Length: 365
Image 1 (cartoon, rainbow, N blue to C red):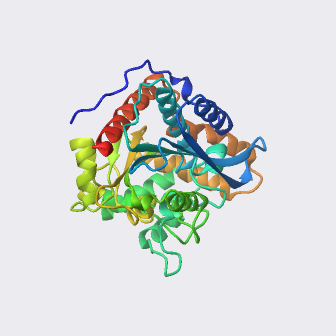
Image 2 (cartoon, rainbow, N blue to C red; image 1 turned 90 degrees about the vertical axis):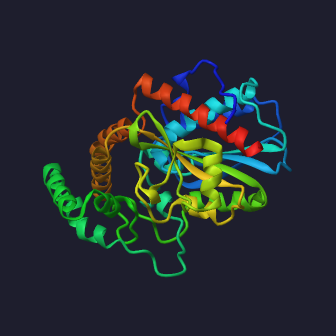
Image 3 (cartoon, one colour; image 1 turned 120 degrees about the horizontal axis):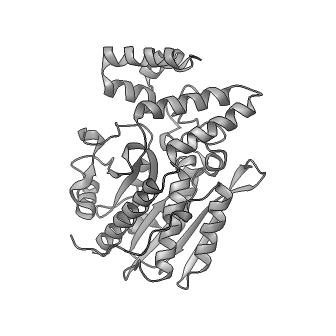
């Protein structure tokens, strides 16, 4: 596998201080491009903590009739947009100075902040508590059940962290680690105030993706979709997670683009367990046999710490009149999903450049 990795100096200043700052920098870098672009903004209901407007910004870079497209999704989980924004801004800078070359007959579609409310408020979900990455289900029929979540629900809301830890450990002892992770994080559709809630209707980010697919006729093109995430896996490493079926064309294409580093939850080779309602599935449904969707997941801290941080977040937001505690906990959310660590941020940008270069080379081939 031969590709050219951009080796320009890495500047971690592209990591923004807020959603508003990230959006401003992303737009400023976009405006520096001299190549053909088409921008489509999508307004999101609500506002940010400083009353700022919330928008999912998108840009098509390259020929409108390109038969091959690299799609970069950021902020599927709101607070993970800090890293997603940094990666996209870094890539726009590389494109602008010619260090990231878009091949012939190829375009890049960037989607900035799919869940802008969560990004602005430093939460993973949207204003209705919906996890976009559990939202891609058929809402016209019966919704999926997660009976183990229902069993654990009372334990998840225990006010004492030590008691929660004991309850989760007991469930793990009885049922195993994978069952515990699925119970908590695989997706649930019964508890709007709880974690990993898939909602009752298509969320803003899903509607944006569906509109982009229609507007750009993406079902007629070869696609390499990279969904940028943080918070799960080994510290600083960007794991390529493929949720295509193991024997599918999507998995074969992913391996041809990214090599042996591709990990599959369905084979147990990933830090992620199989989940319900992933955004991946909305894209899988329109992909041809030369396309694939991967999650590029940058690890931070342990899964147990992830669960504890998220559970506390949902507890606080389920209460009323507790704004100071929410604001204080938002710092813990930020530390988990975007550590203020120079080395971690350098690793993220370097690995993202590597995987994006692989995708551009591979999809064009």
